[in-house]
Image (tube, rainbow, N blue to C red):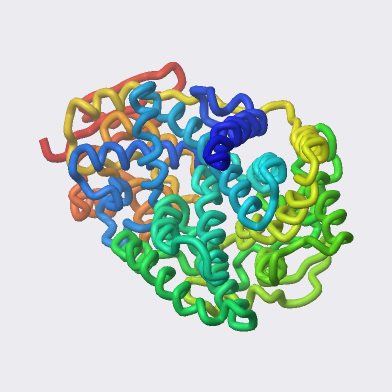
Length: 505
């Protein structure tokens, strides 16, 4: 009963700290950026549109005309489920995305608190774990990745896995958390499965060996529940040559996030922009104190996990302050199924920090004053000038499209450059007005032949482009920046002209 009474104050703390870290994003109608934020905004809105219209949300209306166009992005159905009550308060898809971002980070902090409590931390230690986890630079390095804020599901899955090998607590939550994590973030789902493998192997050398079979059964069950959603992803997942996978300089472990007032100036220029593996001063101080007292961990699981993911996060090449030294241990992990689908291994870095977070929480939680001081230090180090936002508007012609019910749309010019996704992601975001199928799209990887098709289509109305348009059964062409002579409609937004040309009417 006492534990249940403590849930509400802990949740309030998590939401408060998360709001401070993300301020003013949670309550803003503007996106942080025009690339992945708008893409994820469109995807969560599409999930809602698909489900309420009894359509398969995995079959997204982008890359229409390409047989292998599906299964090239995160699914975000877990976020859609969370968004349902938000849609009663607002219909603005960007505002819903920003609220989901806030909720996801807060619940990740809550999961970190419960993991710390399960490992022996007091209530005050759990509160510190929540605040310290939420303020990790890791999350601020992914302000455009809604899916990566869902790390709490992986932490919760890890907590129940540890309970299983220790022979205590219910087992079924693990089988539920695995598909929920997969539907929220395929990266975190993959990292969770790696973590479960490490826990299982480590347990073979402890008294928990007799429970490893149970862990395997519930891990397989959870992944089996996710399998129907993974089929298109397994078929079309991006596979990268191991030498093209991004390595992370070891400097990232000692490089705070650059926007922090207190320590941002310490960030190394060698640290990858999305690799912020600094644990924070509060975690370091508390962990050092706990290790010195020899009361840091309950068993070998967390230290082994930490070592594994620290090495994994560095990627295929070991680099230290700009000097490439040797091939990294990641090359061994890349041989595992799906290993070369991970473009940035540093996204697993939060798992490498658990062996520091948990002992810090256990030590500082011994007295409320220590825990409060630790939380204040974590928040102070995370203080920043505010998360930037950009204005975004939906062009008028998308309102027109909404009333036309077209078959397949081609937007010209096609921009298949994954390093410059803003054109296509803004088109997808604008398509939340109608969700008409479009040849254009954006995702982690592009369909086969998409680059070539874009080169041809961008020469329209050349003979080859007209032939390809006919072969792809395109119904409507929207030409941004010019108006064809025989256009059916045209618009001018004060900067550029846009024309619409029906091909089959």
